[in-house]
Length: 130
Ligand SMILES: Cc1cc2nc3c(=O)[nH]c(=O)nc-3n(C[C@H](O)[C@H](O)[C@H](O)COP(=O)(O)O)c2cc1C
Image (cartoon, rainbow, N blue to C red; front, side, top):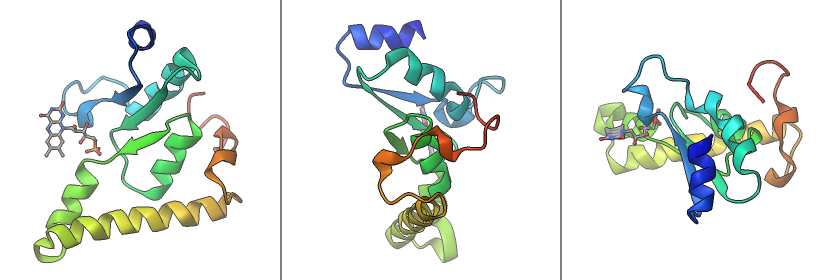
């Protein structure tokens, strides 16, 4: 948490919470586990973004609910790139389209039409650190 506070003090515009795709330390917490404490440490002072394990629109909304104001995607794009006989650019666009659609549907299932009204109340208590 000290690093997050240092980033604020140094004038950073945003922080990205990332475990670099989970490929460095097996025992490190996932980004989504680490996110809430970092959001709490920086408050409203700067935006917090997240990557690592985002595979669907539901994942994007969960991250938002826990305070991430942006999510980034690594492998899901690569899966699109190589899908269905190596679709290339079209596959990447399709992957993004699917995630966007899932996000939209998840918003509706959670009873929200405006992202600004979404918070951790959409999550089952006890399923994520808060
Ligand atoms: C093909 C590929 C290469 C990557 N190379 C690096 C790298 O050199 N250094 C690094 O810190 N993270 C690297 N990453 C991790 C990404 O920056 C990002 O944190 C991660 O992919 C997000 O998690 P996700 O793949 O589960 O979406 C790489 C990811 C992919 C898919």
